[in-house]
Length: 363
Image (cartoon, rainbow, N blue to C red; front, side, top):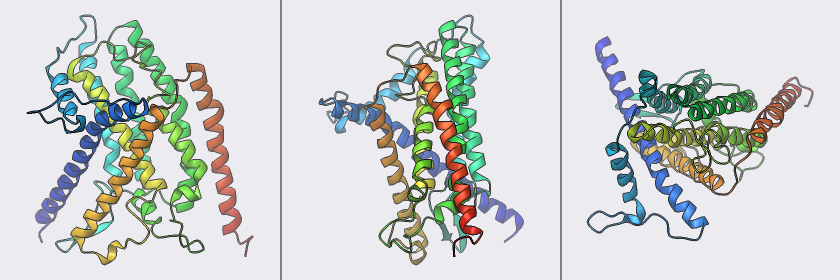
């Protein structure tokens, strides 16, 4: 095959994988809007979304997803007269794109043979994939902050400042909480970390060799920091629609919809990260992808991986509808005085244990 042929094949594979991942992410993000309504209704002992219908079919309230999209696209797109119009327009786009960038390095399956070529089921595999992921997560605050500042509204500005303070409080704990996982598996390549969790522990054959069993404290810290980074209840101080005027108060129509969609996409992203690092990625005990044909391995891996992601999203929704909102001083104290020190302690303890065993102190 010529160089141009290899380039064309690689480009086609990258486009196919990107389209599949983006399609799954947008589908799950849209489905979460239905899941939030239904789960809140279930926890409050009521029916939930079931009014909208197409030709008499309600489909358990799923038609509301279509109604939401139509509503967002047809509402008036108003820009305040004294706003910074360029920043006002671009801020929602920054939020949505930043939330989606993290999926470039999220592996959703093993390396599978396709037409005689080994294809990794990840859009962009890198030895520093975890660092790229953390960098993408750090970009999400820019859209939120710029949206509040560009509105030229003092209440939106206060919401933007709350968002910046909140993300700064939890960004360090978010990254440091994963240091133990990276030390144990000795890699920043997310696909390699997921593959290291295949099968079960040798001494406990019924227990999956997943990261949550090696680093349960790291999982707890990361999950709390992820909810705070995502600015959802009980950490929704930047917006708090029911009581607090948030950073997107001046937005309407599809621009507001992009902010809302970015929040949903980020929830799916954090669920995918937790799946890869703590719940074995696409692996399940008893599943041997090497013994399957390429198409079957790809399909089964995708089913297992996205099934775990959906379960993670459900847990995020469960927390949202179970806990009351923090005060802002409580939120900052939790980030700086508790999560960050505990993440550092977990990292030092993990490093000490690894050094103790690998130095030959224990035979």
